[in-house]
Length: 111
Length: 112
Image (cartoon, rainbow over all chains, first blue to last red; front, side, top):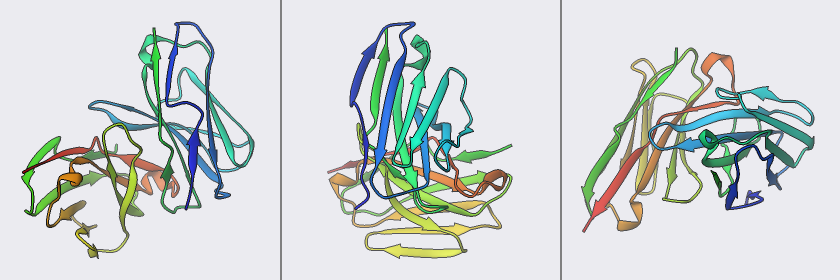
C-alpha cells in the first residue's frame, strides 16, 4: 500500500513565524504535490514537483516555497506565516498521470 | 478558463441510491477522478474515467460523457459510513497530465 505521511496533524504558529511542513512517501513516486483545503473553495494546488530539485507553481503559490532534495520528501515552507494561511494542508504523490495518494493532512492555525 | 461544478450538499436515506453530478469546462482533458473524503481525513481514491461510459466497482459506479463535459458518481445500497464529501477532479487541463483540478466537493449526508 502507498503510504504518504505528514510531519504533524495539528500545528499552531504565530504571525511572522517561519513554518515547515514535511511530507514523505514510500512508493518511489516522482510527482509530489502540496494543496490547501478551505471550506467552499475545495482543494487548491500550491506547488508540485515532478523530480528531485524540480518544482512548479500551482494555482496559489504566493507566500509559499517548496524544497525537494530527496525523491521521497517534499517540504512546504511558509516564510512568514500570516493568518490567511490558516488552513488544512494536504500532501499527495503519484506515479506519472496515475492516481494521487494523499497524506492525512496538517491543520495549521496561524494566530 | 477552467471550472468544475458539483452540488454543495445532498441528503439520502440508508439503503437508497444517490447520484452525484459533476460538470466541467477545462482547457484540455485526460480523465476524471472521484475521491471520497471523510471529515478530518485525507481524500481516498474511488474511481478514474478516461473513456465515455460507466465504470462499476461494487456499490460505486462512475459515468463519463466527454462530449457533454459531464460525470456522475452513483452510490447504491447506501450505508451510514458513506456520509462524506465526494470530490470530482479533472486531469489534463492546460495539457498538464499530472495535475488535478478539483471541484469544491459534495457533502453527502446519509440518514437512517
